Length: 259
Ligand code: YXS
Image 1 (cartoon, rainbow, N blue to C red):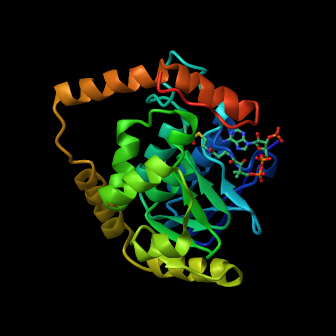
Image 2: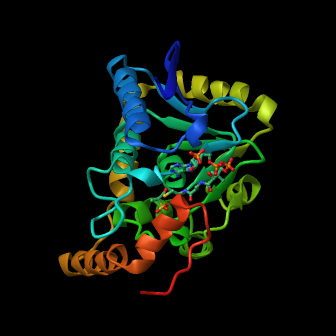
């Protein structure tokens, strides 16, 4: 059974996340369908892609599918993790990707949305960066996505508190482009997309790629990278990591002991 719905309206492609039973968790199948849709849009040379959840969704996406996370002792967000593939596909898609949001945006879905080129959200939308809720050591490129979307203080606040941030506050901080009433959201987003689609696609594609390369051009020494990977291993080898995943699955509050 498909977990997404794909639609093409002229030069605009729309991918709708449609797995409400698991709150659109970013599992291997759902991510694979989104990536396949983006590849199809690229082959058709569509000029804008829109990523959304089904109309009226209370949750845009609950983030990484926790059941697909390792239970410890292994890198949880490695290069080949579906979430990492999704982020790269959005960043490498040769045209703007617009996130059109209704409902809560959680964990890896926050990074997915912030990797999009423009973000339009209904006022009720919230954004929660959740590694600390689960004991997960987020990965380096993921943290860079957050750092490129806002200031270090705001990244720290979101990462350390794991509390949802409202769409109006996110807009005030410049993290998202527009907050639009739910009943106007689709018309507004389609109008935004159509305006972009009327502009020069080659110019837009090269500016998007320039911005991607410049955003990733952060110096990090090999020693610095190795130190981070060593620290992350301590976390995903920890009892806290196992406790975080287990508590989620057992639907109880985790008890973290810092070991
Ligand atoms: O009990 P059933 O079988 O009906 O399944 C429940 C949930 O277990 C399931 N579900 C998920 N399954 C896998 N991965 C998930 N991330 C996930 N989230 C939910 O969906 C069914 C309905 O969930 P329920 O009853 O909680 O729905 P709700 O409407 O009461 O609450 C919606 C949420 C989103 C507020 C709630 O489901 C929630 O807090 N989900 C987890 C949000 C979260 O912490 N996401 C982070 C995932 S890990 C990740 O993204 C990164 C690795 S990291 O953490 O590092 O950022």
